[in-house]
Image (cartoon, rainbow, N blue to C red; front, side, top):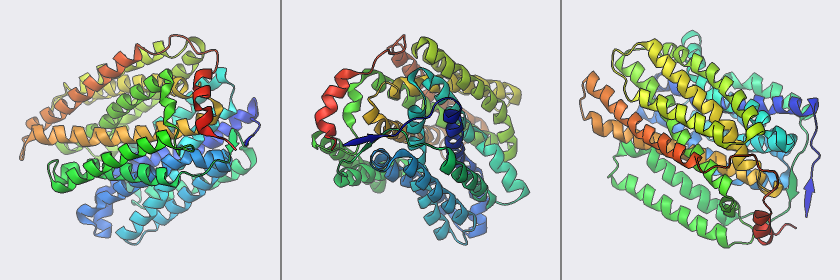
Length: 479
C-alpha cells in the first residue's frame, strides 16, 4: 500500500524550498570548508598524518547512509527523514566543534556523514514533490545554488574563520543554521511524495554500503599507500567484487534497496553519465587549483578562497539560466553549452604556468563556474523529473551517491597522475606541469561528457515513462 502527501502550491512551496535550501547549504558547505583547516586541526589535536581521517570518515559515512535514504524516505516520509537527518547533522556539528581529541572528532564526523548523506538526496526528492513538473527546472536551479555554491565559498569562509577565530568554528557555524532551519521546517515543510511499506533490503545495504565504502577507502588512500600496494589492491578488489554481488542481488530480489532498473530509462542514464563526468572535473578544480596556488605560489587559503568568489557568483547566474531554459526548451541545448564551457575552462587550467596572472585564473574559474551552473539544473531535471513518483526518492539517492563516487575517483586518479608526472622531488615548474597533466585528463572527461550530451532529448518530455512503470511494477511490489 502507498500513501501520498499533498504538495503545497505557490508561496507555500517556495517557503518550503527555502527550508530545504537552508539544510542543503549547511551540508554542502561542510564538504569543502574543513579542507583548509586540516593542518591547524592536526597541530591542535596532535593528529599528525592521521588528520586525513577527518575527511575520510565523513565520506565513508555518506557511502553508508545514501543507499538507504531512498527506502527511508519512502517508508517513513520525506519530511520525517529530512528533519531527523538535520537534527543528527546539527548535533554532530556541535560535537565536532567541541571535540577534545582526534578520536572524538572522527566519531562525530561519522555521525555528520550519516545525517548529511541522507539529507541531500531526500531534500532533492522533496523539491520534485513541491512543484509541478513544468517548474522543476526553476526550483532545482534555486536548490542548486545552495548545493553547488556552498562548496565554492567553503574555502573562503573556512580560511576566514580559521584566521580570525579557530578551526572549531568551522563546525560550530552549522549549529545556528541547523536550529533555525529545524524550527522553520516544523512549520513550513509539508509531507510530499508517496509512502511505501515494502520490506527493508538488509543484505542489499550490507553489500552496497560495504562494497562502496571499501572501494572508496582504497581510492582515497591509494596515493598514500601506493597503487600497487597489497592494501590498496585488496580494498579495490574486495570493494568491486562486493559491489558486483550487490548489483546481482538488487536485480533479482523482489524488494531491492535501490531499483537499478531505473537505468532502463534512457534520459536518466545519459544524465547521470554526464553528471558524473562533470562532477569529476568540478572536484578537480576544487581540490587541485587551491593546492597548486598554495604550494607553488605560497598563497594563503583566504586569498585562494577570495579568488574563487567571482566564479561562485557567475555559477549562480548559470544556475538560474539553466533552470529556466530547461523548463522552456528541454535539456540538450543548456547541457551542450555548459559542458562546452566546462571543457574550455579545464583545458585552460591545463595551460597554466607559474607566472600566469591571477586575474586570468579567476577568469577561467568564472568560465568553469558558468558552465557548471548552467549544466546542473538540466541534468537533474532530465535525470529525475520523468521518473515515476514511486522512484523519485531512490533516483535522487542514486544520483547523489554516484556524484560522491565520481568525486572520490577524480581525486584519486588525478592525484595519481600528478604524483607520477611530478616524480619524487619536483621543481616548481615540474610540479606545475604535473598539475597541468591532471587537468588535461579532466578535459578529456569533459569532452566525453559533451559527446554524451548530444544524445540527450532536445525537448522536455510531455508524459511519464509508462514503459518503465510497467517494467518495475512487479519488482516494486508495493503493499
